[in-house]
Image (cartoon, rainbow over all chains, first blue to last red; front, side, top):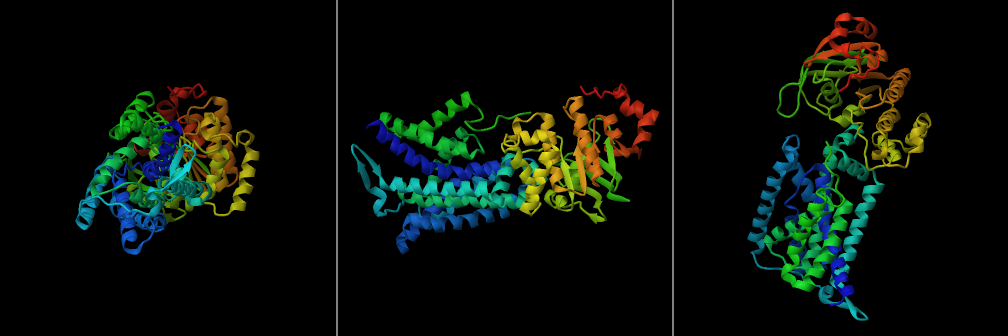
Length: 290
Length: 247
């Protein structure tokens, strides 16, 4: 396959990965939570999109308007009920790893009992279409997914840079104590950030529903991939998540072409090792200072 | 009249021991009170506790007669108590101007904010010069100025400052103490924690010696400076007057 074609595949999918990874890295930035249930919420989003598509014929791209807000509410509730009570604990970050992993398994169990453990996906007409431009072609499903991801990420960016709560989220990501000192109610901002993070995962689930097949346990594959993206980009860095997602996705596309699809997942982890050897804080992460 | 009152306050970090072992202290309105004491005496912990960043384990803190212990940091700020910590707590990735604008988070009015940002940029020409630089690129002294400028924008009734001269060259720290005097002259009450006891006390009216989490002594700042016993115990190493005793 030619280079342009492979790059197109990598970039389009990378944009969707960026959407998936952004919520995860933002949550880490705002409150040092590594939410291992992030991908499980994506799968919840995918199942909601699946049901809406199957029963009501709602297009997956359109159902992002449902899955996003629905998972936003779930995110706020999960924060208030499960994470907030731990917020004062000095071992908060460590505890949330276990807590969110347990949450992921609980979500997986619930989905399994409702939908059983077989593969699902939605099949809107554009999912398998292509646009031919000379010798290369653009898969329409991935193109729409890429555009939808960029629109959402641009919306998030505008929110973070031009609104008061957005400023507060950015301030909290940079320095939680300093944000409190200038009057930010970091507790409320944390709930908001949790809602947005999980909401983005839900919206990404709609895209996942037609770009990939999924079953309740597939969140385990996804969370590994997403963690490698955000660690490469630098934990807590939104820019890093985007660059990491698109960059790694393009490289993985080339690896798939050269070596076969079974090497695709491995590419992410090999790159993770290499980049951490050279730059332990990730591409855009801040080095720990004393 | 004491505007800030601490009564038998105990506090500490996480599940660790009490760092503040029952502090009782009053800070008079419109005055600058300087707290001195050796490392580990609990000076910074006391400020963090007043500011709402640390929970009070027992005892009471009152500001203007109203209990503020148990309030969150943003609520304490809402009562008019503004904290400038040792690390200056600027947002390193934001520009100087954005940092100043963050004061607007609790100020409410946009017009007042912009008016006051212009005012502090006039007060601190160096910040005006650097206003579009990221805060992390500023020198220590400039960062301290920016942190104090941000506090100035808020016009708090009370300013808590933790070791403003930390890591600064003597000339720069003189400038910083000058700004702290400006706060008092503008009618604000200041509670200052300072390792450089002499300079701190010179800019204060009242002084307080803290050791092992309790108040050992308090009195007029000049009498503390003149007290031979306190001199021996807490000021001795800086008796040359240059404040160069920090390791």
